[in-house]
Amino acid sequence: MFQLPTLDPSIPCELIPQASRRRGALFARTLLRAGAFDASLMPARIGSDHIKTCQEALGGWMERELSGLRMLSPQFSMHLRDSDEHDGRGMRPSCVIEWGGQSFGTRCVGPALEHLEKHRAKLGKTVLEALEHVAWRTLPIYTPAIVLECASDTYWYGELDEETALEENCGDDAEQREDMRKSMVTRAMFDKVFPSWALGGGAKPLGRRTLLQLAAETKDRRIAEVIESALKLMAADLPKNEWAFRDGRFVGFSGVLAWNADDELTLRVLDDYEQMIGESGDYFESCGEDTADANDPAVFRDWFTYMRKWCDAVRVLDDLIWKLTEGDWPGMKKGRR
Image 1: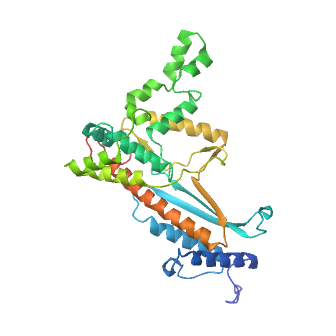
Image 2 (image 1 turned 30 degrees about the vertical axis):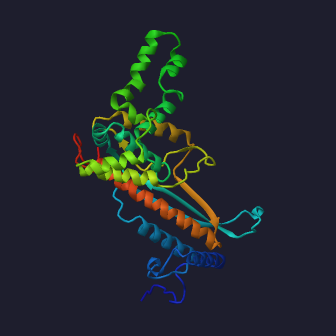
Image 3 (image 1 turned 90 degrees about the vertical axis):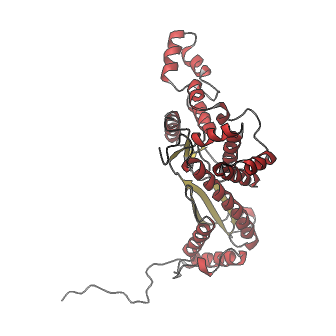
């Protein structure tokens, strides 16, 4: 009778090069000495691929630090590579960690911000700017001001309105200029959909003392909670994402904040913008990247200290987006567009 061949149980299911196992083991020791991991983050069954075990432990640490998110979906990847032999460290391995976020789709933020603005002039503007400030340092999100920049890049030759594009394409032909204006996205469309304070610039936002006073005096708990979240974001001490060394334009946004259910302009602009960037092939999606000596616990101790601050800011950002897009605000239609 025919029998299928069997392998001795002592033969491993996968073969891991000895050098790779050694690098993984040394990196695991580095992470343990950095003090970031404990037994609860280790896989129930540790395999022979120590680098994979480190990846799973890092993923568990991030999941623990970012528990309870309702809007944002951060993602992390990690791999080891040999450092450049010309950097003075020989072939010591480096750890490369990248992070970004999946998009939560399109949500409407206008009704909440307009209600805040009616409650106190510049309050909606202040909350929106606090959100934008931290989002750019953690997980960038499309907001009205950013959509305006995308329109400038896509249609207006980098200018604030369409006049230069009309001049370049139509010259002094008034009829041709009018036909082109009717067929394209114009600055007037933005002014119709968004209040001027939502598009950036203008008056300074409210200060911390004023916000604290507003939160203490208001009888509307929704407003007080939004102000409290904005204050936490304003206090976040995070550096800007360092993109100067990256090639192309960033497109890995973690969501779209449209103004209201009738806001077709935002989606039109972003569709055209992302198509333009996609066709160019000149873009990147990860919003953060760090490279560190895989054998230096002190470096990773500092990195985990920074990432705890990053995770704290992401949790507050997530909570504020949820409150603005899911709260019971006048004129609000809950959920996705």
